Length: 343
Image (cartoon, rainbow, N blue to C red):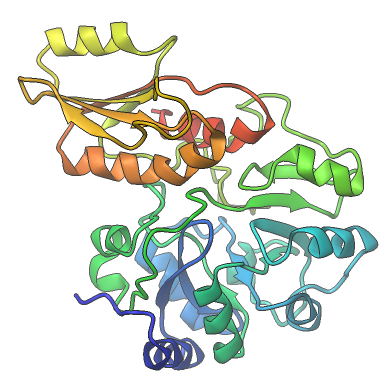
């Protein structure tokens, strides 16, 4: 199916489709989202069907500005929320607050809170302004699989379920938004993302972070709504089996090659933050594909999901990933890789 260029005509058509209860895929500064009118439960149900998403897994509501969040989405707006919105909106921070009664259960997974954010991508901004309704939008891919950072990824993952895909090129952030729960004191980090805990704490003071990479992982049960997307134990997963290496991955790659596997290897660039990153090369046999990843967290995040899509498209059966560095700015990357590696 065709991808739609981000012309004014196509943006207005996309806004009209959202108002009419249809689905639209669009770029944000994080990843591509699959949007529906958040006030229309029948429209939102189309998202769950398209993605094969568990009903207890809530959606984030996207709005063009803080005023719309207060007027149409959340029932309580706190001083902490105001300070965070002032610092990080528009941008990659989702705030979880008590919901307004007009927000349907299907958006929140049946819970009493709702995640809301103001995206910074100019196309998302214009689409939301012209749509005139809050837009529920998870990542535009099948549930648990790799999040899309190109319009072509959306087309590949969702096919006929996403009949209108706005093509805004590569999304700059590459991983999903940070999600912060504001109904507890101190606030609790639910999902690491583009904005680091350190950056948040500079604005509002101490927040509660997961005590380990495993703490916020859980399985969906029939009667327990999740507080945020991105909490399932297996998520962001390629078709190939992904393994986080103990060191640089060379030994794991060697063992798999001996077994005749077709292997993809994500390893850190040896040429600084810029030189050589994103380069792909194959060995003489064609059974080893190496992608050189940036050594800075921002660059790595922007490249990660696209690299996994690339390796899946190349038909590798195993992906070995050199463990990235530790630190606050790498937290989201470790989260995504750990969940992608969960069997």
